[in-house]
Image (tube, rainbow, N blue to C red):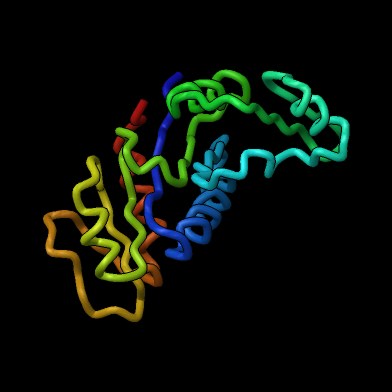
Length: 172
C-alpha cells in the first residue's frame, strides 16, 4: 500500500494547523486513516517529556527512545532525529496510515500547500519545490505572481480543492 503525503508549509500563525485540523476531520469522516507529523524547529528538545516523571528520567539517563502507553493512548519520544521519509514509513507500517499530513519540513520533496500570512512570506518561500497550491489570507487583495493556483483561506472550496489534489494519487 502506498501513502498519500501532503505538506503544509508557512510561517507561524499563518493558519497551517487550523487548515490541517479541518482536513484531518474531513478525511477521517470519509474513512481515511490519517497521520500528522509536525516539524518542531525549536531547540528545546525536552519539550515532550517531563524530567520529573519516569519517562523523562529514562530519557535523561540515555534511553534512545521512550514510549508511554496508557488509557489515553501511546506516546513515543526520541532524542535522535530521523529523515521525514522514515517517519512516514513508520506511520504507514505501524499505524496503517493511508494519508500523512506534514506540517513543516520546508525542504522535503513532497507536494506542498503554501500557507501565507503576508506578501513577504511569498517572497521568502517561493523558491521551494513542489508547491501545488498557495493559500492566502481572506483579507488580502494580492495574489502571488506565479503559475501556481492561489486560493483565499476562507474560500468554501478550499478543502474540496485540497482533496482533489490528493485524489491525483499517492505521493510516496
